[in-house]
Amino acid sequence: MSEIKLPKRIFPKPQDTSIAPRHVSDVTIVLAPTINTLTSDALSIIQTEIARYKHKSNAGKLDQADHRIIQGYLKSLSELDKSNRAREDDMDLANASDDELLKLVESLKAKKEPKSE
Image (cartoon, rainbow, N blue to C red; front, side, top):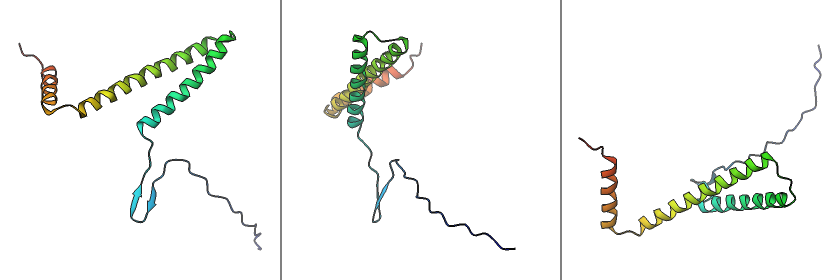
């Protein structure tokens, strides 16, 4: 029997869009965005979307689904604000004196310990 030979097909490798480590000699470097960059990107996206819904609202074309979406954006804004405040509080702790930090630790221990009666 004779075999039928088909032409060879060359398929390109699929492109990987994930964050992959880059190898430089013997060192592996992984680049990740900072929290500030992610937060500012999220805020700009939310700002753009809210502006779009504001324009849609002025035209009187908002429906119930749009109201839910806007509510989700507002919830996300409040969560981002809380995380920013927590980060600012952490920065304050970095600048606090040792005595202030010890007092804070003692107060947190007192809150955490159950009261025995």
